[in-house]
Length: 199
Picture 1 (cartoon, one colour):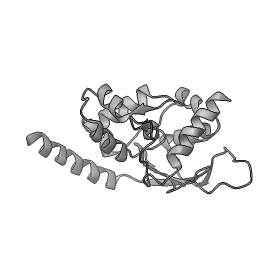
Picture 2 (cartoon, rainbow, N blue to C red):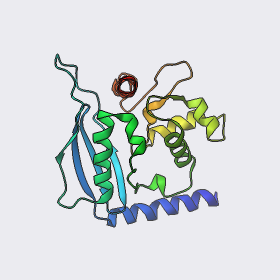
Picture 3 (cartoon, helix red, strand yellow):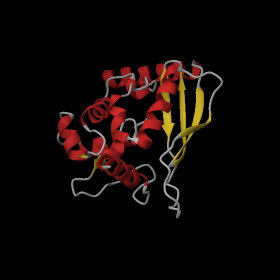
Picture 4 (cartoon, rainbow, N blue to C red):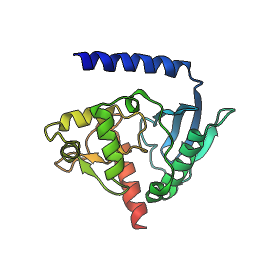
């Protein structure tokens, strides 16, 4: 109980600190549509993806990514985030060689199961690979926590960079992502990584 109260206190303190920091916002045009990124001088707060992939057109898909709206000041973490996404949509496997922007979100500021799972996912599951919820629970040291792993994926504030789209069901089904089962965003990301890696 004391541990829970301590975490709650840390979370409240961090939210207060985050409210006091100078938040900046940028919007990226991508093959998925508009990606919104917010952050401050300490790191990235959040990445918001479009709710669904734009419908396929008869044209070839463009794998370019560029800034459509940017703040007057650009922090190092925002610059790194832009560079990361520009590379991801062209050559996703190359992102492993890029610097990762700092994250400034409560999840990464406290010791928790969610943070541990996200860090393990980022470290062990590379572009073009997938892992099951069960396997990720095993890697996190709690083989019975597959459902909790799903909750951790849902809480991920920086999707794609921390690749929760690579976590699938033991049955082989891709499972929920962002807008639920009907959303083809997860399927698009997995196909993009595998097709691009083979090319």
